[in-house]
Length: 370
View 1 (cartoon, rainbow, N blue to C red):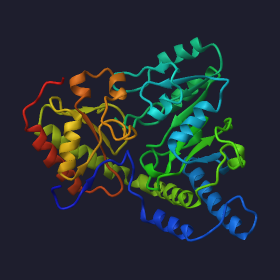
View 2: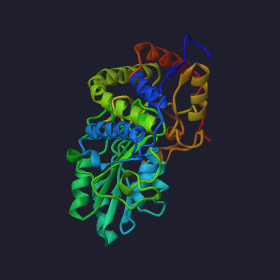
View 3: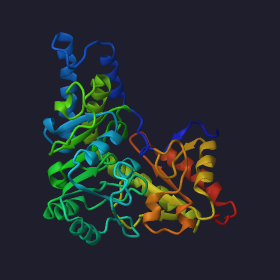
View 4: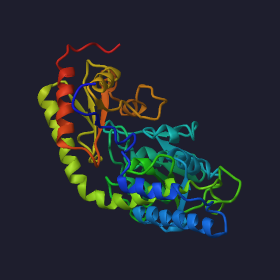
């Protein structure tokens, strides 16, 4: 590994945990108590859980009672999509695998070449459904960063009597979140995407889903299982800090924009996917036709720089991106795309390191895509 220190540019996969979240977790890890117990130890644990619930609710402009804690964003998405069995599910073609696999037979809502859901196609699918539907569209894509018109989607879906679920795990600290303004019925957020620990997430629900996990009746019967008190405390702190982090979003966007301008100046082969659309301020999906995505990821890793190709939730594999395929990108572009995602600890020097290493890759002769 070269360079003075490793450079982490994979915030969309998992964000470095914030010190304040670590401190909150460390304190609770030294305590004992089940949040369902009625004695003093249990009540102390319950207070920690309910404080976290209030902090997560405040992050998205919801009521604490609407927050259902889960162990992951994947679980929250499954709870949303499988928790209304009487409804026909419709999902966008660019959703995370945790949505697509939770509803494998659901019709896919197409997207434009820029990665934005086609509203006319959604309306046609709603009419075709012929029964109450559940529409699932993410707020911002984890690979391209492209932001979806969720308020318009929700208004359209509601006119047809549908419920709307939104996977918003990439938004906290990057986009302002308000459940009422978005108009959605169900919203997924995840701790480790916003500076908290892995192992905690939430489904914010205006309508209660049918529980997938049953047992002790925790989370008001919506999700059974002993709460991970320490992880939830860390999640709550991270959710609170995400409000303050919004003020840093323009600075992160400037870093991202500088990175893109510099790589474009280095090579006319560079393609920034989704550049013409509203995107997350931290995300760049960058293709270098003639260089396979997996080759770029490995070469950058050897240079001490961590980036991704596609989603990070595919068992460590670099696979063809269904998102870029849904956008209709040619294989020579889609197969050469990597994702760079910055965050709260990113600095100018990180961009310098990336540009230097990427420039070395761009200087190599282009190879045809197999």
